[in-house]
Length: 314
Image 1 (cartoon, rainbow, N blue to C red):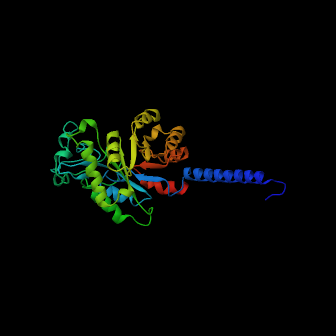
Image 2: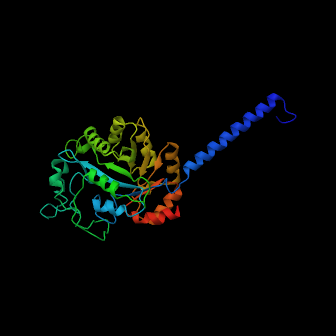
Image 3: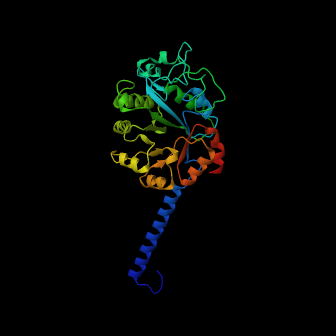
């Protein structure tokens, strides 16, 4: 006990010092958690590595694994025989796919080639590798088919090596729209169950982030398993998105806006809600750096070959 202090004064001073110390420790922890470190940033290969190989294919996934990705993003839809296949649309796009006979498709007729009306044996006969993507310059092309989700995950689990994080995660975007229900895709309840059960069977639920623009899908996944990690995809402003999220009875782990919508205010508000911010789809290196300076928690890109340089500068 310090000289000149009564017992009451001493204990009041001790209590104040303890509280002050606890508050300082809390601030350090809080600030530490908000600062980026190399193993906390999500570096996500979009559709595998869509800028380097045909999107959403095994070659694109294998290409992404050559770089410093922490996660692979891919899109999934349901086939006519209830399998989970990797595809951005629930049909074969006319500008990147050819029929089993090698014929081209047209924009007018492409939706007639609906994945939900086909078995996977039929689907894998289409070639979605040889046509050059209209928006991306891919240096290589090859005859490739749309893979099953299970094959993508098995490829990653088998081929991830010591150049990567201890665990490669999966950002699985579920394609769903109200107008597609029971025509181009099953209703959300069935779609979610097919996907969830397959991921559980593969033993990777602890490494998966389930993504959707369709809020109904996120709600269904949360009802199936409140512990599963969810990502709210949006192209809207923060004000519009936050109104939509008020309808949720949960908070998604990640808020994923279009990169053009991101600023430091959005990032701060999302963090205050307890969400990480991982924007899509960022294909310019300078933009990646700028977004990290704004405080985002990750980058989704068609060009994961940028990530090695980015990681060194973080």
